Length: 164
Ligand code: FES
Ligand code: FES
Image (tube, rainbow, N blue to C red):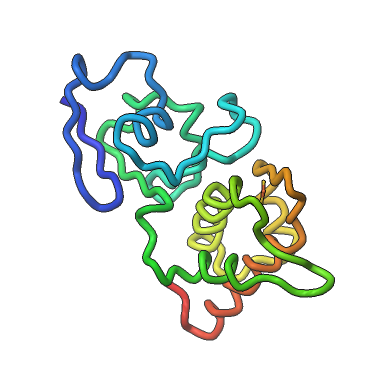
């Protein structure tokens, strides 16, 4: 059996029945387990849309085999609280000069998970550090300035003591 802790719950998967040897983690999470918040766009490690958190680090789930997650803890966008501060900051971000942090929203789960991992490691990043951390994520709607602003806004909540 393969055991993976997904959004706080251990799941047991039959290595022979549930998992083809070449199945990617993104396929397992999205297509087998129905966690459709994960977006798969390029499917080759170039866009960040499929980002999830594994053991506290942002990883590209399309570039990992499902079997590689055996024994590890995975968090997807579905595993975040409804009032998650990063999600709230993305939803709230809309202002002249920066614009909106999401238009079509296809890239948003990947950006949110990358931002979560960044802020867990570095709660008060500079703008340069935010840009660097998010550099592997592509937004085809071009919301980059507003996305960075949303991450900085979340960081301000950290400084105020209100961020988990
Ligand atoms: S879908 Fe995984 S990096 Fe693009
Ligand atoms: S909001 Fe459309 S791709 Fe980013």
